[in-house]
Length: 370
Ligand SMILES: Cc1ncc(COP(=O)(O)O)c(C=O)c1O
Image (cartoon, rainbow, N blue to C red):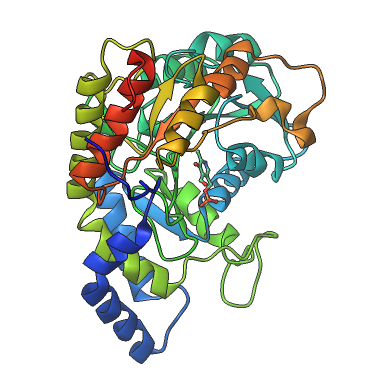
């Protein structure tokens, strides 16, 4: 099939149009109540999101980056300590760790999934290791049983970066409930996105939740006394009210993501390119990322046909300038950075756009015009 309209990588305005009425109602509710920071919308959203994930507690914060930084600080991570993290993720995973003052120790990834390789973690744990950060890259859960076994043997707490994994699970257990804390981003492009910045930490550990609550609010003990030096990283009432509306749609949106991903997979199976695997994993399908040594050519072919793609991520974390100390090599992460390409996939994508994208990718490999 042939279309002429561009296929955007993501069009958030379509979602906003679908939800305009309930979002306006939520806005008005907060506006007339007159309480804009840490009020009843935040508390309700924390309860609802904790229940959705299967966690005891949730603490709303200002962003996914802050969720990670605050969870790590609450676990005692700081200068003189080390944190192990994957070499392949979005830059904020590494920024969040660096903001604690700890040393970043990069572990290489599984070349098939891009998720942290448990064998690599084992080799990097030492007496200074204070936490292991695991990312569920693109929405596919990392190998949590193996990672928890290794970390548990060394007494190292595991923090999950779930910024791409809202609603993902493994063996029936939700993303964010395997480690001591699960950190979510509600950046607008995520599976559950606010109309601005927002984040959340989920945990079953009440003391940890209380420390994070203090850390997000200057380090307060009570209204006028500090227990430590914290951040200003509060989730505001408006974003919480919008997220409460959107949370109701998340299961249906994730189902639609899976439908589109299944269509892509069926159409692209058998071509010389790596495809995401989501049969045995309850993948949130945040991104549909293909893997090919002809990535740049494929991207240019799609661009000429009006189909937008994105590379997640062209620079592995250990090669980002602030972290480049020359001592760490991660060949699998470096390979992924050269080969990965994300195709458009979001719940409001139209069938015709999905078909056009699939035909265009198939046409590239089959030498057709598509
Ligand atoms: C894997 C990962 N970690 C952390 C973040 C940071 O989230 P935020 O942009 O809300 O700070 C993002 C998203 O941007 C992400 O994709």
